[in-house]
Length: 104
Image (cartoon, rainbow, N blue to C red; front, side, top):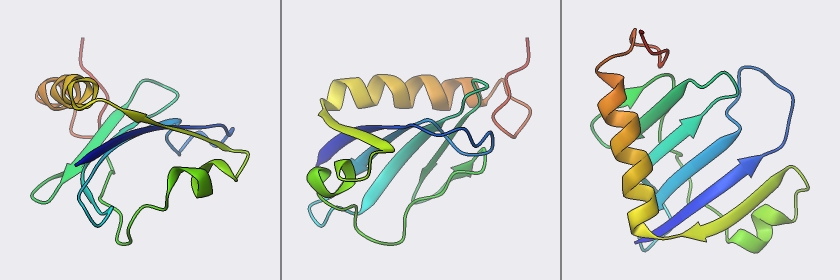
């Protein structure tokens, strides 16, 4: 497995600004977390789609191809970093309104 984090520099309020992906050996997403400007978090795996997030249908390109687009700042991360973000997103989902906005 490969784990990546990608910052997406844009001003679209409905699109995530930070994406975390767990990639299999064919670079297909097996799990994903999306974090939005307003703090909303979505996630997806083969069984679940939450907060409007879903797994990509195509393999993720190599990081140098992603980074060639000035909007994106990708980097490889550790499994531990991914698992921490995954755990936070999925645990907090139980306290959300079903769209990734957290109840106080």
